[in-house]
Length: 414
Image (cartoon, rainbow, N blue to C red; front, side, top):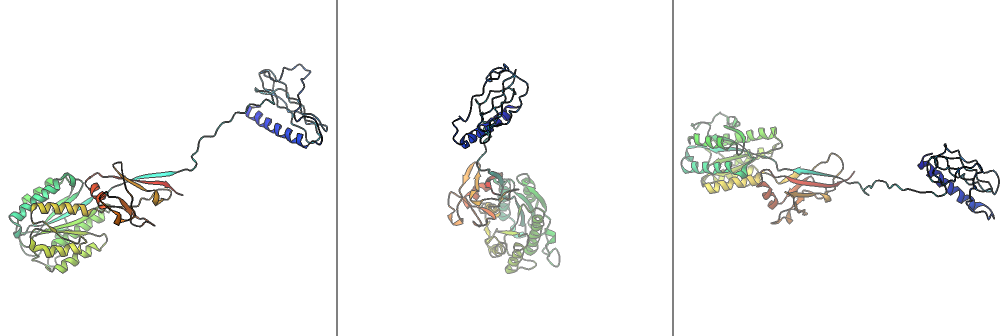
């Protein structure tokens, strides 16, 4: 009999013996009686001799009988277990003969094997990396005759500085000029803008694409009139096509001009409605408008308001132009992330934490609590769909083209 089995039998024997002793009426007999030595000359039960396998003790046969004797030890074996106590008034069976290696009963040695440690509550956690969406900018530049001289050179200087700025790394840019040729006639009778859909300088990632963009400005001369409707339509159509093909990007149109339109529909309200139709469409395309001369302010402002960016930008000198481009870069990329969806489990919004480069970003209740130290909040505290960054945190992260925000989801529920 194996040691584990012996221990189990010993436990059962002890329990039965105790029960029998308690239930015997008026008996002075002890619960356990000394097992007499066998006359056959078997060794003492405490010896480590090893016998053949022991046999079970016989059942008690008479009322008031004593406990059965322990099985004698054999050569190289363990003593058999003591016979079980008799039922009420019965005699315990005789001890079994020798068993496997072990100590004789009733001197039982219990060994407790502790179970492996298990956490009181299992906690499945998840961490995800959130990145700001890549920005794609379609530049539509006015090259009409009025742009010659300082407006053109200032525009070139500001754009080249922006395209080569390390902070612009990762932006994808494309470029086209208007008018399409040197004439003042519309490119088609209905002013569809289709000739402006495809950029002259194809989409390329900065700073690698900066040289080709800069060279295109150098190679382009100023001439012709200002077909703003055609140019705006083409920029918006081209941007929409790219947004559809790259839904994970943010694609915007950037139009620059120094004067009022001269061809197609020249009404500022018409151009505002045109920009608004693309902003309200699916996917939504925003239009950023810059004026190189103050005479273009009204038209550019109308386009910006319709295009979802609310205000036009002053680009009347190199410094202002560059500042406007940086402001557009900062506002074009939304500072929010979709609420992560784990493969399994449910998220407790109260356990979500954010950090950037190992520094925790403070969670606040809503946008009104945003301050100089930044922070983040949910779009809806009860049923959040987006994680929103405060402006201070957003601007810090936008300066890093490889920025990654670590989102820890805490313990996931079932």
